Image 1 (cartoon, rainbow, N blue to C red):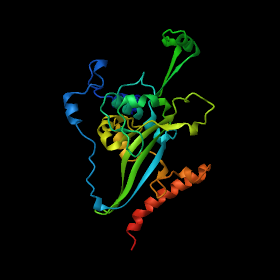
Image 2: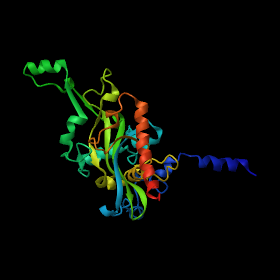
Image 3: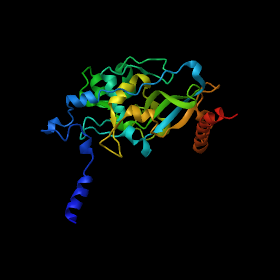
Image 4: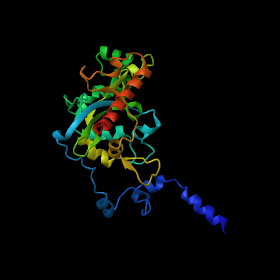
Length: 301
């Protein structure tokens, strides 16, 4: 047996799989052709996110609305966070925050709201500027202003929130029991990026846990096509990336419940369990188990 040939084949098998993940890389005549799909590929990829089935209100035997926190420090949630730097990476690799902001800027994503109840709709970037950007004037700039001069740009400090500043996502969804199909299902309703308050983002004297704000809430059903077209890096097989829509609908993330709909005005867990992270986590687990047990209880006679 020629061991050199065997070792060569094995070595080729371990080449960076990211090369294969790029569209048309094996057929490209020039580097500029990498990522440009042929007409046949475009026709084959002309798909849409898997449509939600119609659910009649009479078929919902039981439901529970919950809010969850997706901590981006957890490894399983990394696909939602990375890449944060887009300078040295292809245009097909973007974080979830980049995808949302890009489509808000170009006007494709319009169902953006102030809170998770989707009562106050934001007009666009104009309503988000105060949340996403801080503009501060230095002392020398104030001296120019007091002297009646125009403030020089070098004396104006601008701080914009970017993908690296996002610390977590918050999602709102509803668990419901479909009596027609006889199973417990989940439907994602909204998602919100969470970052430090831009006015205190670089202030180390502020408690980081008390400085988190929801930047905006996106009505998820209207963003499905956008998130379907944006792909997530598949760590197990980079030749087969998945979409953000598939990742979120399949619940391929770890979320911790921080609020549920209840008689107390949908109060949060930390509103009735104070200063005890362990007990708050146990309470979140109790709510999750209650939801899981609901499906089993439906079949108890």
